[in-house]
Image (cartoon, rainbow, N blue to C red; front, side):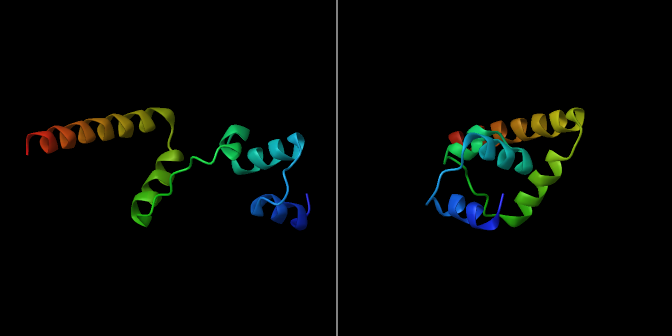
Length: 84
């Protein structure tokens, strides 16, 4: 894929064919669906973003542990917020 085509795809002035979309998704490590849907949420906190990126590199057991901790912390935060 050449830079001109990629630029057109990024700018929205052209739509990639299915095979190019699959190649782009594979290169980015995301699904084709993720590229087609514009529902991404930007994380503005750079430190938090770095932490999430580090979690992505963890093995499944460590990810599960971090996710469980986050779930509990968020649940506790929401409970405190509800009673204040």
